[in-house]
Amino acid sequence: MSLAHLLLRQARQRPESPAILNGEALHATHGEWAARSARLAQRLRAAGLQPGERVLLFARNHPRYLEALWGIWWAGLVAVPVNAKLHPREVEWIVANCGARWGFVTTDVAPGPLAGLERQIDLEGDEAAALLAPAADALAVPVTERDLGDTAWLFYTSGTTGRPKGVMLTHRNLMTMGTGYFVDVDPVARGDVIAYAAPISHGAGIYAIPHLMAGARHVVPASGGVDPAELVALGRAIGPLSLFAAPTIVGRLVDHAVALGLSPDDCAQSFKTIVYGGAPMYVADIQRALQVMGPRFVQIYGQGETPMVGTVLTRADLAGSAHPRHAQRLASVGVAQTPVRVRVTDSQGVDVPLGDVGEVLIQGDSVMAGYWANPDATAAAIQNGWLFTGDMGSLDADGYLTLKDRSKDLIISGGSNIYPREVEEALLTAAGVAEVAVVGEADAQWGENVVAFVVAHAGAAPTEAVLDAHCLDHIARFKRPKRYIFVSALPKNNYGKVLKTELRERLADA
Image 1: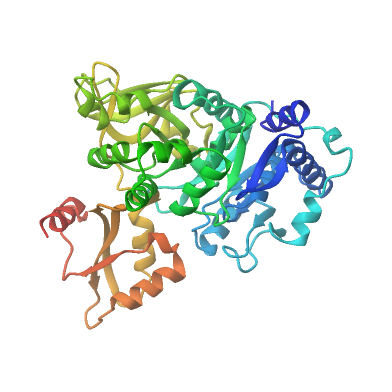
Image 2: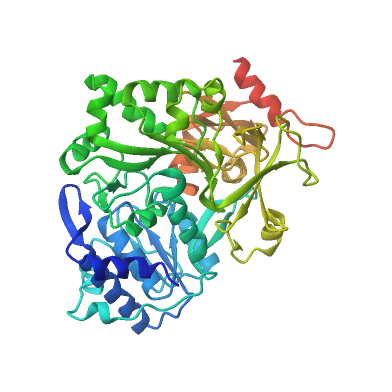
């Protein structure tokens, strides 16, 4: 069973129904989408790509992104969608790690050739148009069958070592997520529309699956990103939008609604459902969002290792202000979604009492097959069928999970994951830097900002501008520190380990 069968099913049943829109303009019906993806699959196979081989997607949001993604699956290949914010050097490491042979890009994020790829196709160019050009019998191209346990999506997420890890998401994982969406997150009707304002390479793109299952429409805003005014107008023009958004995006939508003086009824004309996750949402922020935009929010908690499937705080939970524990529930991430079980345990994997803090564990058919070519990391993350998330939290008597802290030093800024060691390693290659420690600093707009504490070599005086330029040459722009604090020494324990807790306390005190 392949995810490509979802597209083939819609094309056979409703070939003329609108499927992909570029802004308000129709880009493809379900029949046209399927025909293009099928012909791409045929050409990929004719070029010698074998089932299970990897194909890179390094592009901004674009209508052809979805056609390429389903064409990859139609050919029995593994899609490797990567963050369009990454530096090309970081993407080249991913290419080498997964052995991708072909890549689809947009030239704004990949202005030059990526080392390691045999063939690099610009999604906006003539070559992509030719590869996607269908023939009259395109739907006769057979879907290359795959087992449900075969990898469909290789999702690269940063690891604690500073090198990304490839999360192997199978057809079963993604089918489970898709069907669970209808039960736990939001019902989807054929006339609905999902908007890709957040990156298709991440959670927003994963939600294409349940919306294709329902035969809904998929719209890529003309801007290709988050423009609140554009989204409000687009929803009014083509029907209320559903979208996945980091809390930062939710804040921007709310601010725009306030600036225009929109009422909740006005917002209902533009937005059906806004699913938020990927970073902490403060209680005051969701209360304000509900007051301004009305009951159109759902919160999910998951990880790349269990895509979009962990817990859910439903629309009813968020709007149920009459419940005696409503305030506590607003601070939680909800209850376990239907396809999974959630536990909170101590360091030995033993359940802790209700209300106590421990590590969050998740089990179910959404949990990844493992990390690509990394058996040690897989063995550490999945034990006896349970995913050890590295997140700390507590469960109440009703099953609501409240996240307390992260056991890893992950920084989440604007919904993007940033691991300090990766930034530290980049800064340590800069001239004049002797030591560096990177931590997150609370920020009302972004959730957290990256702050670097820097110790210079004797006689050296690296400047903030020099270090910023160095980071831009080595890592993605969004990972670079927002602030550099120059210190004579870093606080350390008896074993020489940097005391990052003390650094965070300095920031909080300041």
